[in-house]
Image (cartoon, rainbow, N blue to C red; front, top):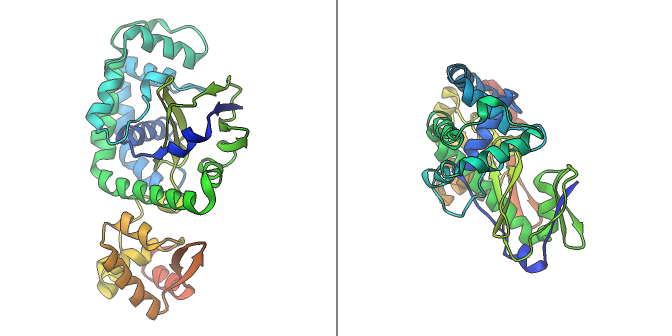
Length: 324
């Protein structure tokens, strides 16, 4: 297994950040795999996979670059620069574009665990990678970025609250169950591969959520910044499932119906506020009405209060054409 060694101060200073480029690269991985984890991803793939495949058919060099860069056990490092807090997508992708050609070729050889194919022995690989990432961002991510960002912010809120309740160990063990976990003795397991350990004490440690459910990788600027990218909580991840049935909207109002739709899994008012973009007061009023109508119930989990649909709420959703 691969693991990082870090001291207590490094862990205490670690932070959650949101990265548009990480979300874009996760979507590139999903397009490359073509394997959805839930219905929302399946709908997204149906919308975007044909154009993606057509683009690569028209550009066989970039297609070969993608296959090489997304290696079976290692991703070419220049494709995934370590995120920086608050950085915008154009600045992030500029760092991909600025990779020295020799470094890009070396990273690809590592990802391939062997020699570089002749068609990739060229200097424009960083530019090709940047152009493809820009296409994925503009065509498949940016149109839904505001909703994706709210989902990611909700995950960060939930993880941060978990740190305050149960400490960092409880959070680290839950990021990618079975892959990421705290081993004790200042050791953080980051994956299941037999890579040499890295000493990261004193560096910046970041945790970066993405909505794609089978995504996850690590990135670093050696000795400066290390990042673990992980899939956000599954209950929040289906960014394509938020269409409110028209009949339910007419009955409850669109905003209240959206809250009921989201409560197939337990969520807090903070989560609902982040995902819907509604104000905390509006969400609270909707939850009060839904509770009084017997459509949702609440329960306490530690210091949090979570809401979920009742059986009556599920029946109403099924009658409106929505399944759990």
